Image (cartoon, rainbow, N blue to C red; front, side):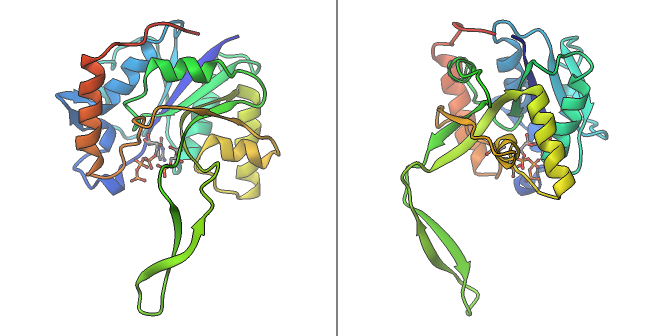
Length: 241
Ligand SMILES: Nc1ccn([C@@H]2O[C@H](COP(=O)(O)OP(=O)(O)OP(=O)(O)O)[C@@H](O)[C@H]2O)c(=O)n1
Ligand SMILES: C[C@](O)(CO)[C@H](O)COP(=O)(O)O
């Protein structure tokens, strides 16, 4: 059974408010993107990887992996789901529809091989995602008459998870799910949502809480610390595709 990594890296990073897309910011002297690509390309059994970049990305040549023949590039789209679908359509040229695809955010550079081992132990229909249980009491907010944000409800915390990536699904099923959502005009922010819209229930695989998505400026120092810790700690080389 073949599992193809697909990395989405065509975002502009509005919330990061930087002078370039966040995947091209340096953390401990290395491009954020290169941490993510290194983790996936060094995972045992990975021979190719689909990388979705903005069609107008002038920064890619600065990557350590800019000339890596294992990388198959695809052009991004307006939304993350469009970028994923573009990547899947590029993957179709080299893959079987019965293969699996593992979609990962380039903005999650702290992914570790141990989490890939856990996720890839779940390659049964309809697929699975890495997730982390919420730790806090969760509130839903609303704007009041004075323009302040107030609590509208406390969300039941039992079995409440943060969806992370990678998210792994049969290639054909994920293409059908994303095309269905596109046809129905349903916006989805992760692959599992599209699979759910087909009536399936992907499994949740508990992953590391440090597999955070770099989104806002305050995330950079924390992720730099996690990456430093990972570099100085044991690496996970067991497992594989
Ligand atoms: N049209 C898009 C939008 C996002 N992404 C990717 O999807 C992942 C998660 O998206 P997000 O964190 O929202 O990244 P950005 O869209 O770049 O951030 P922002 O929403 O702040 O602009 C990122 O790796 C991003 O590069 C993508 O490939 N194509
Ligand atoms: C896919 C994801 O990382 C799962 O939590 C998240 O939905 C991406 O959301 P974004 O708004 O595109 O960052």
